[in-house]
Structures are given as structure tokens and as C-alpha cells.
Amino acid sequence: MLDIKFVKDNKDKVKNATAAKQIDPIVVDKTLGFYEVWTNKLQLFENLRRERNKISESSKGYSSVGKELKDKLKKAELEIHEAYRNYIITAKDIPNPPEDDVKIGKDETENEILRKWGKIKKFEFVPKDHLSIGENLGIIDVQRASKVSGSRFAYLKGDATMLEFALISFAIKTLSQEGFVPITPPVLIKVPVFHNLGYSEHLGNENYYLVKGASESNIEEEPEYYLVGTAEHSIVPYYADEILSADGLPKRFVGFSSAFRREAGSYGKDTKGILRVHQFDKVEMVSFTTPEASKKEHEFLLSIEEKLFQELNIPYQVIKMCTGDLGAPASKKYDLEAWMPGQNKYREVTSTSNCTDFQSRRLNIKYLPSVSKSKDPNGQIFETPIGPQYVHTLNGTAFAIGRTIIAILENYQNPDGSVTIPEVLRPYMGKDKITPRK
Image (tube, rainbow, N blue to C red; front, side):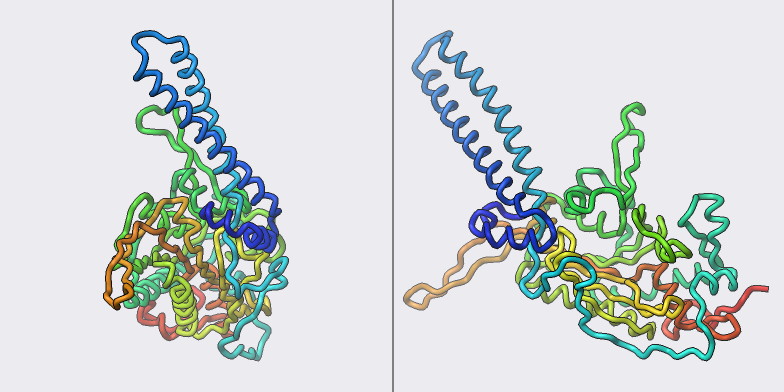
């Protein structure tokens, strides 16, 4: 959600930014219109209240005029709530404006390739896809998962499970050394909290699971929750309605959780194996920082993602999203796409976004700057206290476990069907190769 003063002062800029994200800019005009209605009704309410107070001070006992004003006040109060609701609902439709260096484009076909890293291996045999490799090794089972849970689920077994825990341990150890605090977050979050993350208005809810659970007080009442689509969904609200100290920023978390998505609209090869499933595991980075530091922090998160895949020695390319593929909350976003020999193409394995204060305004997460220092005409330095400001929130994937396993299986496959384990993971695995189980 944007600061309404910023929207009023930069109406044309916000409309252009909204249009660049493929959203009808009429929402900006509607928001300003509803805001004006709300503020006018607030003023009317205050005028009526002042008038009532004057009558109360000058009158003794019952007054028909006073009762009439009381009725008007009650009606005005209801109208204020309705006007505010209309304003807030519409204001939340305005996306976060993209940063100035983000390319204006319609969709993912206009994203920019910033750089490539690593040498693509030339196989002396036709490389197999991850599902063929995994089934041959007996470490991925989608058939039995389909029997138990339906399509687009999978069992990871044996060395695939060991590989998952190796990736988790490697990522958390690496990020802990960079100042990230490990955290295991809930995977169920309240519906209002989910909506305050800013994804609902334009992505819809089709990619996330809405579930119900009986309340403790009354089993007939079932509050609604969302299953998280990433650990970010439950880590970003961690400081909701709190004021942090500037001295304690940035606050960085590395979270591990399962994630759940409907993946509506996906088809073809993406539905085979574990590339695009309804349940998967992720190691996610989340950072809370000051507005002045958020751009640098974003580049830092990207550097971490690159470092992890360089340590795995998996070729990748860095993609910078254009405005049409940016999403509502992000002002800037990078994807890292790993080379997948089984598909003969790069596929997304991580992303990192700077959401500036778009989410923190909805979640009411602020920080208290120390002071503002300045000089008077005589050169004397004086300090001016500054009130609470909204933090900037950023997120980035360390490892999407399933897709990283795909990249390892396909890039490290051998002619005999075995898979060499990346050197950096061998201490966690206790072996250097995955071979078919007899």
C-alpha cells in the first residue's frame, strides 16, 4: 500500500507506474476520489460534533435539537466507516511503483538477461530428465504419491531425502555466517495477514490454499487460514504492529518451511516430476532494513543466491524482471535460472524482491530513526528527533529444494545412471555419489 500523500503529489507518476505493471491506472483516480469522500465526511462529522458540544454546554436537560444532532452523528459515523472501507479497498489495488531502472515491458518475454555464470557441460550421452534419473535411482516416487495425495505430489526417498537435508544444512550454515537468524515459521497464517502481504489483489488467491480449522472456543466456528506459498509469507509479518530500533537494522532471517501452491494454469512437462508440485520445501531469506539501505540489501540477497549456486557449480543466468512480470508488491525483482540439461533450457530456481515499504504499511512495521543531524547558520550541529518510519522488506530464495535437486540430478548425471554429489554437499551426505539401490 502506498502513502496517500505520495499518490496525491505524484498522481501522473503513479498512474504511469500502475499502467507499466499491466494494471488499469483508473484505480489511482478512484482511490483519490474515495479518499476525498472519506476526508469530507470526516470534516462533516467533526463539525457536527463541535455543534453538539456547544448545545450540551449551553442547554440544560432534554433538547430536540440535541437529539437530532445525535442521530446525524450516528449516521455520519456509519458513512465514515463505509467511505474509509471503499478508500482502503481501492488503495490496495495500486501496486508498488517499479524502480526507475526497471525495464517497461508487457510480460516475461521482455525480461532482461543480465549475466550468465558457469560452463554448460557437454554430455557424451543424451542427458535424461530428473524424473527418469530419480525413478531409476529409486529416490523419487510420483506414482505412489498420486495414489495417496493425487497428481503433482511426490515422495522423496533415500538419497533424495538426504540431499534435501544436505541442502538445508548447507544453506543455513552459509547464511548464519552472513548474519541471518535461522527461523522455523508457521505454515498456516490468518487470512487478513495474508492479504496484508499485498499479493491477493492482482494475483488472486488461485495459487494458494485456503483452509479452515475449528476454533478452540467453539467448534462450530471455523476461522480461515492460508497455507503459505513460501516462508516469506509468515516471516514478513513477524514484526507486525511493532516499532524496531534503527540500530538493530537490518534484521535478517533464514527460514525453512514447506510451501503449498495450486499452480493453476501450468501444464505440459512442468507437471511431470517435482518441478511444479503442490507441496515443496524452501529455504527463504527475509530482510527488514531502512529505506536508505534497501537497494544495497537487495543486491546483497542476489549475491547470496549466486554464491550458493556457484558453490554447487551449477550454471545459471540472472534475469531482471520487466514491469509486466514484476508483481504488485515488488519494486524490483531478480530471478536466478539454473541450467537444466534434461530440458535443454534454463529454469527458475530462485528469486529476490525489494518490496520497499509496500508490505510494512499494511502490516504496520516501523523503525525509530536515531535523530536527524543538521547545522544552523552559525555552524552549530543540532539534532532533531524523527518519528517512526516504515521499514523496507525484502525477500529472496536460498534454495527451492525440489528445483535445486532437479538441477543437481540433471547436471551431475553419469552414463551409468549414477549421480555425482556436488563437492560442497559431500560432508553432509557422507558420500560422493548416488547409485541405484539393489
